[in-house]
Length: 240
Image (cartoon, rainbow, N blue to C red; front, side):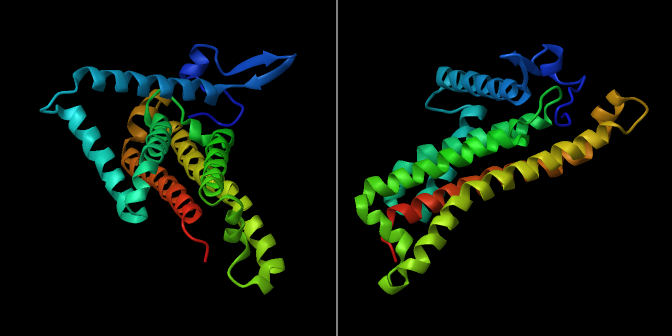
């Protein structure tokens, strides 16, 4: 966990000199890009392992993944209806990605990519573009009815309000995730300074906080999952 713009001696990005690169003479910070690729590599290796060990009588890892993914899929179908099953792969992928990126911050030597506003904005913008694309694909030009309301006389009032409301969604999604994860990372960094040495502080001083942050990081991933599902649900339903 590192403060913004300052390399931390415990991070792998600093060890491998992957905190900054120079592009066109300008120094660009890539710490969170480095850890994003680390997270994706770990997810890829996990996927390959599970695929290679999949069997009729599942092992522990397969059982945990099947139970978690099945629970998320069932929740999606119960909330959106049977037609929501086609969105389950995307929603579950978002949860797994955000959950994994959040959890990297609890691994010694790693930092959470979601503690950087650029990562959370990218996720929020992708969600924003996707649910509007689904709305347009489902309703065509009639998708505008989702922004105008049922009372035609109130269109001059409702249209700008709804447009502002929808544009605010990626902002609120990105800031909520970034604020919570960044706050947790900074709290861990403060605890790192406790103890006789930084290593004792890192290994001992933060242990009680890990359980709380484990819950918080899981909750933030689930909240983003819920918000994405709600936005898609609103886009494919009839305008009221």
